[in-house]
Length: 239
Image (cartoon, rainbow, N blue to C red; front, side):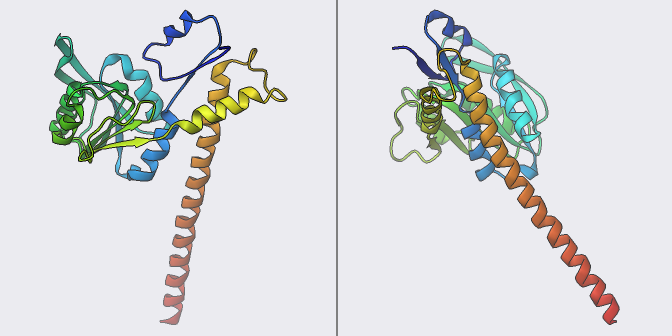
């Protein structure tokens, strides 16, 4: 192998264990498109990190949507179990979105979701890259207050057919685009190019698509307001 493609490594330092280029891609753009398609962002959103270590991830999501962030303060009495101690940030009256890189047993996730609802959030969803979903994790999600759990297809679907709250989105396009760009040596030299530059180009492309759609939506609203004002003026002249 002369190159490694990964996605949302749990720790970026892992790249240092390899002596060949490592592309650590992100699922953030794919998730952002899904969020925009399924959630009414105008009602207010807050991106929640399930621990202090994920604040940077939550902030990047918040910056994309102009939203707020919150942090779940928790402790682990033992391995695989957690206890929510506090919620830092304001979630009341907002749609809360938990973002993380991996979900295993689902206990921590469901506890965090309950704490968010208890603090007055309208709803709580989770967008998590790698769905390990061991043991009865899907059952926990089904019984929890989560509206849904969205994971990528970086791992096979492990949920029973009767699990309705867990949904998969594909990140294949990310890997295909990076592979195509890396192989197109007419424009890019894969041995000299920083891996993040490729990912940034993908993000810029998708963000520009989002911005263009927002401009179209704003123009439709403006045109509607102008028409309403015009007809009001005609009514006044007629009377």
